[in-house]
Image (cartoon, rainbow, N blue to C red; front, side):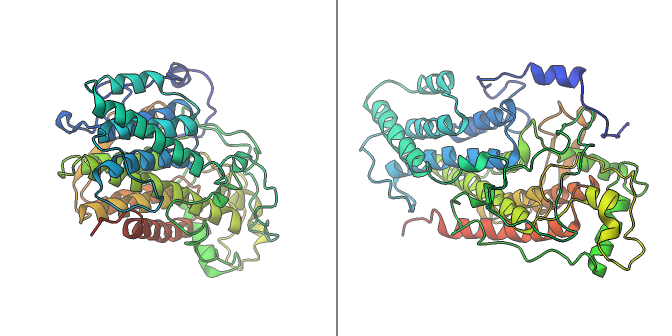
Length: 460
């Protein structure tokens, strides 16, 4: 099996397949393009999973990058839950949504609130999906009240998030939001080797991705820096030398120590940028492992409101770390900067032809977004289930960019394995330092625990 991923993305089957992806409409469970079809048993279809599947498809079809995907997931999932919960009244919430009209249908309200918020985030009306959803319910007062209430709650969430910093921080300019470091660890674009065939391609020496994303108002944290990680290693330290040598040998395109399974892991968890993305992948895992656990409609709505909020906050945390610490990527360090670190270890030496196995992203390394998303998702799923001991498996959710994965199914016996495998995939791919992963895992777990404890507690 050819696992060389560092050639140029051009034309061919992968590009043709991407070109045919739908731009505006989404598919229902059972279709080939639904993310639920491979992982959900028919008897567990429900309103919550239906709408989460639709926005995951929008992330894929609009090619939304991971931090913005995480942001886009949150408001619809939270709005849907708040609308339904106000009718049923089981959980407390911090937003003061108010009393719902008596007799309103909570599932109708969920769908309308969800799509109202999603329409703003995705700039897409979801008209056909919304009408098809409403047609499932019999006409009557409960439906009418649910529609009216859902729209009211959805618009309230839209207004609440209007000045949260998301719009101005879409720009790929620093604008003084974080101070650049001035030592040898300072991040600069790796370029020009940003592409892989048939995987993703990034522009050579492109601007950094979303330098202000860490300044967006979080959902469950007090600020983007609440769970900020400790500082990165001194580049002259023995710890940095060990990391440098490990990634050089393990993560290079022509690594002699990376196993076939590790190479597969690097591709399996790459997740983008034209796919489900890492936050979407862990929301999908949440659906897979929660589907048969007996949660009713409102408990599922709450669970995925928490998934949406914590994945968004994981993105804010990771991007705050990235631009606060401004740490160089391994490829730039190994190919260009090694001699400037002042490290006495002879292993810290320049290898000008070294390339990472998967494409090096266009933003700083520390901490790992992948690992933050994975730790937050797995910790939250563990808290919801009361255990991490869950056996499950699936194929890669997106195989357009990595057709080598077709038919390759990965198996896990507990949730923690997925988070570790996901984080280590970036080391096997040569795009992260190990400390990027370790620090991010700590932060992601803290984000999930904080949200689970404080965000939507059950009423006494």
